[in-house]
Length: 232
Image 1 (cartoon, one colour):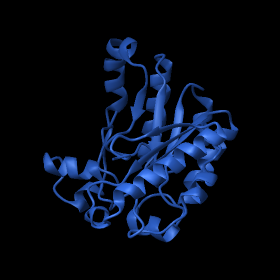
Image 2 (cartoon, one colour; image 1 turned 180 degrees about the vertical axis):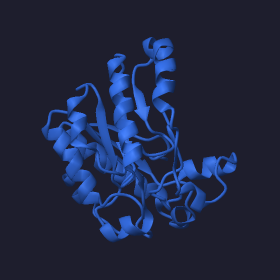
Image 3 (cartoon, one colour; image 1 turned 45 degrees about the vertical axis):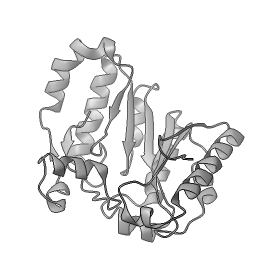
Image 4 (cartoon, one colour; image 1 turned 180 degrees about the horizontal axis):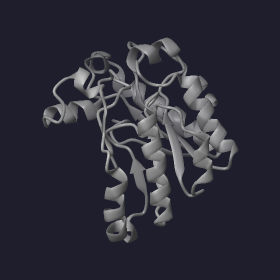
């Protein structure tokens, strides 16, 4: 479910969602993309669609091409919360992924929901450079931990993970920060000339994926390595 066009976080990896929307003419520029437009009749559309589709839905994900808890956009955050409540009331669980702040009030909703954040670095300077409009990483992580402590299922997406020529960092330090979550998803950075310029990118991502697998097995965490991250 993508109930917003655009995203104020303005990630510069580059962002696959922005590239897709620009390619198909939904947005005309990066500036246009960074000025999100909310689908104002989201709840009315859910009232129409949920009765017809709920029996065929295993889980509804928010979101693939935008952010449901966009940092400092209260109207988007409020709409997302109301939508999740409505979806849960229809007997459908939700998966949520954000670079914003997950509100603790989500703990009042279905315990079958799964709440996640994207976190690819614990370097705040890198976050400011590459995810300029997103929430500071410590704030988004603290909000996720609060939901975990409240008994919610939590997960982290470590994707798109950058190569050392983009930022040098200790993956183990990042993994330790998120060791409380139920699930970790790990994936390589794509669509970047800097990644392809790093001639050792394939063995690098193979090694890092193995680190994630080993860490998760050691700590009893479920994991998923995105397709194309491990190569021969």
